[in-house]
Image (cartoon, rainbow, N blue to C red):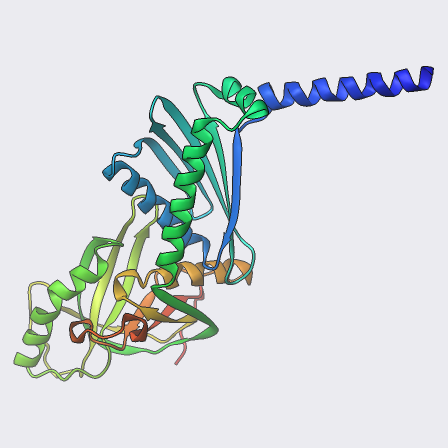
Length: 309
């Protein structure tokens, strides 16, 4: 009898402890977890785009948002009368799958929310589940628009280039290339240059936090004995370099999804890389067609002090 009372007492103590933990110590109200067949960086930017879309559609007001290099994102959203904190964790499970965990907390009514959870499903939970479901559908639709295959270690070919330097956001990268395309090609042909390969993009600076890049939009050309001068067009030799390579198919506007895949591959295989990707474009977007047939070779240079000959 005494042993039974001890078990009952221990059980009650455990229940009280769990109740206190659930109401006052646990750091979130809900947790939603699912997987996506892509790199963490792609999910990171998809969350940012979703956040912006919520604001534009009047479904939520973004109060604050900050992230950490494709692995974590911390958001405060105002939904109705509630201020909701979303803590995202993005974990690459392998070279093609990311585990997405979203921990959700009502910052103003957390204890009340948790009490409601015990007896019923509160309206806020239904709203959040609906919004998360919309996010997952949007992410799945986005992933169907492109394909990335990481080929492993390779070499960026060395060439002589004419180029212009451009500063841009990731989203405006392709638009800025198109805006400069005609002017560069016209001037090069006018001055006797031959185009000897595919249009190329070389990122020279990538600020992940500010979503900004500086890149060279380049065309491989023949070297003339005397190089004409132009206010923006410059010339340089790009040396061969060790790199990891990916084959990208899709609209070039989002070819940076291959950057994320290469970055994740490098981390997984303990390769130290420079965040200065290089892209070679095989198709002309102005010709239209099925975007999934458009091809680009994308490289992420491996850090090394030696250039290949």
